Length: 385
Image 1 (spheres, helix red, strand yellow):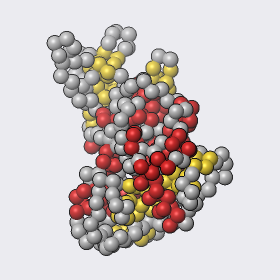
Image 2: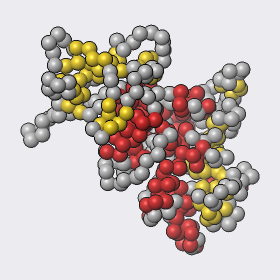
Image 3: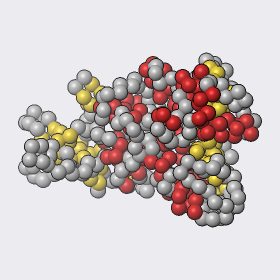
Image 4: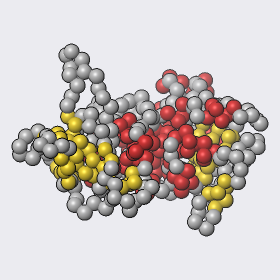
């Protein structure tokens, strides 16, 4: 991996024995404004004229202030001209953020004003919270420091210390850990609470980072309203969150998200992945609304519904797998109405509010023929009882 020497601002490559480093999380501007890998490698003086050079410089200075010799900025530390290196980088991205000493989160459209509440309002409007790639950059690091447009520190959320730094007296709180390790607020609304409110991600995740204790549907819901420039990146930006790896195939469009779910199915027996909901599509004179859909969701947006955030998988006794004919699994069918060609496939799912309560979730299927062929109804909403 390539790191930036904070003293020389030159790239250095490490194959093993990687030193401690800070890593920057930010939103990309126009490509012409960012300092790219080849430009950084040449280290031409012209890169200082680019708008994107400022955040590299600020990141390096902060890392040096924090006693670190190296930092990493994705715009200039990944050779995007090499498809092999790009694929390796995207599959390694989550671990790079997780292994960093600290992650600096740069909110270039937020201005922090001392002793005012304006940052409360502008924080939730930051573009950073709307982008797909920044989700893993929020979840993976052990320590995250938030900075505004002027590189004024807003606050810190640390997994290791269960505390947030007080900055300019604004957040007026601290946290301590009780015997169970749960953070306890003293006063005010913590930065973690604000971030949790903006993102829909529980504070437990921000403090502890135990992604495995949350269902596939819940994790998908965190990405449901985030956007990426390229449609394939809606899937690729979630690889680390589900601890899966797969090759990149730019040009495959929405199929990238299908492939991601197929990889999740291979690794995690979690029926919540099938508990997404579709929205009605208006037919046109030349294109009637489709009647059926596949079992897997077309995009992360299908997990936006609130019910996706509280469901948990039950233990699946009957294994299921991806085959050359698609997903093979056995579920119980309940007839929608006597004599109907519509059924509910009952999923092994419960709700976190009462995991022992007998609640069933079903997806609506339509019978295709008399030989036991069924397909998911395009607009059949996931039902619970």
